Length: 116
Length: 113
Image 1 (tube, rainbow over the protein chains, first blue to last red):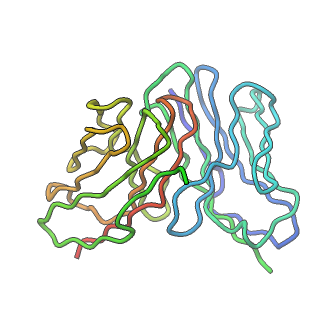
Image 2: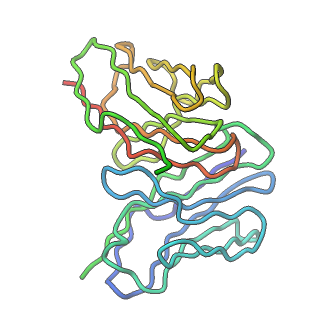
Image 3: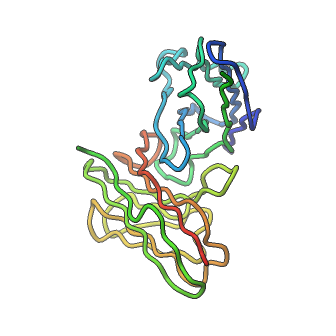
């Protein structure tokens, strides 16, 4: 069975410091993993996607994530936070065996706050 | 511009009324989805459709209905049977079901008065 756990419901960092948003997953097969960002009262925007190619995935706005199979993790990082990064971030897992939307699992989200 | 549109942005409903939320996409995607988002929570799947004239229930389909008569349109009706309909509703589409990237609309916030 698939599952995804975002380990922090809220992360607060100072502008210009590194960002780390943690995500652990569980999947019986080779998963596809995604990070989405949601600004208040907006839809979700894809940040990056892992689909069994390079384990270090670069996304938009300077974000990147590393797939670590041994740790079943897919943490999202950014070297230097910007005020515009304040938003909700969702980690998503999808089991490649299936072609059904019911097998796409969303994490509960991490709210990122940026201090001036 | 290609993308997904949802309307209206804000919707108010009296108890006992049915309301329909619109979702249109011009990305030529086969699959479309409806999610519900409550404060501080992730997304929960209501219904999805992988092809025209076919759709399946998601995790929380009770009190909702959908249709997929055209590839580009996937309207969601919130019926009076839905006990707690106040939420943010998100529509998404993808090239096909499964692990393909989902593209999201801007959402509709429904409030029951």
